[in-house]
Image 1 (cartoon, rainbow, N blue to C red):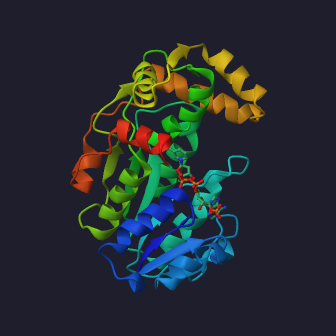
Image 2 (image 1 turned 90 degrees about the horizontal axis):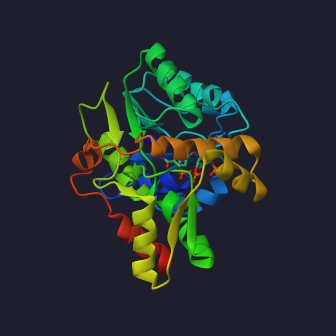
Length: 284
Ligand code: NAP
């Protein structure tokens, strides 16, 4: 019996394994990765590292075992059929009779293009009938703090989010919630709406960057079409630019500002303040 994390070489996966290692012996943790060589440090700490690729169902044959608790970290190959990729892990988990499959989904309030693969994966989980938990993650602070360096260069944050608010949290917060579910009990069938304790607006983000950096940054709201054009002009493929701009409309419509409190309840501590994430971005 093991706690298994797929996509374990990614940023959320790494943070989840780090969180697990605080309370679980390394020999009880399995990291599923595409490139085992990149996880040599985890193997060195005693974590079992095994190859597994969502595009290769055979790579999951015999990988999961009865009683395992598994975290399926959603894929990021947006040019592929991501739901089919997730189905590979769901089918392997059902065949193995795992104790729990937790899935990193998206806030239930968020609609539009970014939500489609997540809702279909949730439906696939329900259809398979295996014990599962939905970790419906909100936005990462890091998606906001990626804007810090360009904002300091240009003096502006240009987005299509209107006056909408975002209850984001750090990746580490979401990782701690995932670890709490994997190590705890009674999470079967639960669906958690995860987000930061405090929601912020892009105008407030600009103010906080200005305050901490001493450089004036303003928020300049634009239409979603204009924002999509700006993104494609930077070389982002059009479908991705469209999805990113649509996510700003989700923010504008108030869909990314959960007040559920589920995240801090699961982790037992307040979520990381955005100001802290900005400070980290300014002084890495
Ligand atoms: P990340 O650092 O890009 O990690 C994604 C992980 O998925 C990587 O480890 C990658 O493996 C793995 N992966 C991708 N395709 C795979 C495949 N075919 N087979 C096996 N593994 C595969 O992303 P993250 O920051 O950890 O976030 C985790 C997920 O959350 C993302 O993949 C995305 O679905 C979602 N997300 C959420 C937000 C949010 O704000 N809530 C924002 C962005 C993304 P390699 O290491 O081998 O590349």
